[in-house]
Amino acid sequence: MCLPHTNNLCPASKEDSFSPSLKASSPPGLTPPLFRNLPHLPSYTKPVRRKHELQLIRISLKTEGRLQQATLDLLAGVDIQFRRETRLDIALVKNLPIALIFLPAADIPTFVGEGRVDLGITGRDQVAEHDAQLANGEISGVEEIMDLGFGGCKLQVQVPEKGDITEAKQLVGRNVVTSFTALTEAFFAKLEGVDDTSKLSTKIKYVGGSVEAACALGVADGIVDLVESGETMKAAGLKAIDTVVESTSVLVKSRKAQSPLVELITSRIRGVITAQKYVLCQYNIPRSELATASSITPGKRAPTVTALEADGWVAVSSMVEKKKIATVMDELTKVGATDILVLTIANSRTG
Image (cartoon, rainbow, N blue to C red; front, side, top):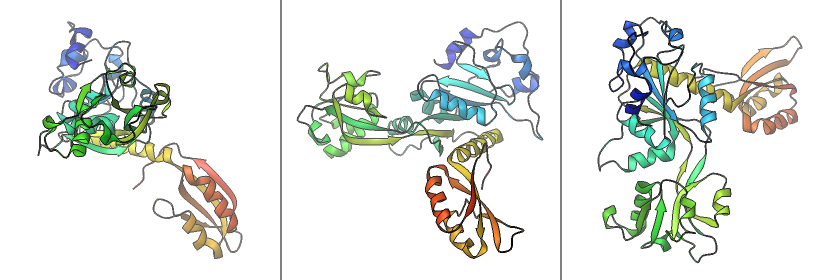
């Protein structure tokens, strides 16, 4: 699913339906023929115009997997409108000068780091694996912008449940299989007390998939693999004995990205994530208890307080973390709050 292959999927045609301004802004590494003959181009030939015309930017997403739908829902929340045709790894956004590029999660930090892609959504574990492969002193070209709040998991050291290994240091000098070789080498280098991973006595072997089968097949004494719920690990007869990295889905940006559209999309995504994390709590409270109630619902900056017609009463509106709202409502009731309402926030822009 490398970018060069897309030229075979989208051969150049005699007529180019792109506007001259869009061709002029085509990014390095993605030539205009790459975008020709893509479906629904006519709807894109009149991009949104702002005070200053925006350059085409590229956003990389996972090609498939359990987190893809959450990513697509996030894009819908920031009003990125597109349609991905079957077997195409590039889709043009209809209402903004953006190209969506679908890549394996492990490749996204590389494309972002080299500046071939401006923004990316991938796992923190993949970013850590990419950065672990950099030379000493080399600065990563990938900058983490925000935690997206979904896809939480752990990269853990696992061994056979019925075996005699209970600590990661017992795997030193043995065979360990993983898809995250750089992180695994760094982890065992600390256990062995060596600075150069080439001097490791632990044998780290790479396997691209079905890592959990390595122990049962006699290929490894232990593995390092991602664990979400732990069901796959238990089904394979394995147990976790240590954690290498805790991961979640993150928005990353290339340090070479300069387009103002990058900041616009980042702001929109932050607004959607905030809306998903918070609810709006409204209630009435005697003014004498306002200070106590405000300490329960401090909001993002401060609660909004409005005087009521009823003497001595005020209405309060405040953002509350969704996971805490039940407890907050109980505490408000105890201090005399009434008419407590909880409203969903569809979207937001907060400071």
